[in-house]
Image (cartoon, rainbow, N blue to C red; front, side, top):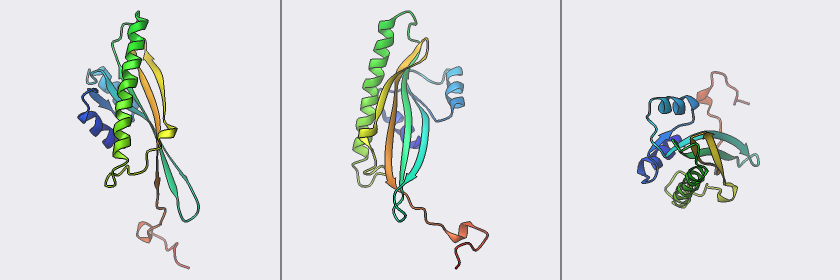
Length: 157
């Protein structure tokens, strides 16, 4: 998923930089001035499994934020504008994700769970504002075991 979002950022006309899941990546890029604003940062990834015995379903929950930095800490109107602008960019990314998930040859095919998407404003610091998003992708997930992966003979009867 990281590669997918990084690729989307590279194609976007509205987001200038990207940071992956790790907080240290975000901090390092920020400290080294390698994160022009607005940027997209991934910050959450979860994988859960559900479904009946013969049909395991994986649900991937992804969190990302579109952030603006160096916003005047004394200007509430600039802070609200940054949040509004970030939400507008988020909607562009969600529209792209929806389109990608409709393409039969795309790895996201039929997986985007639009109804489980949540977008909220975020204040990262006194000068950093944006919108964070939580979304879900649902796919079939094989839990078939391969005996070549194991030293013991656990599959024999």
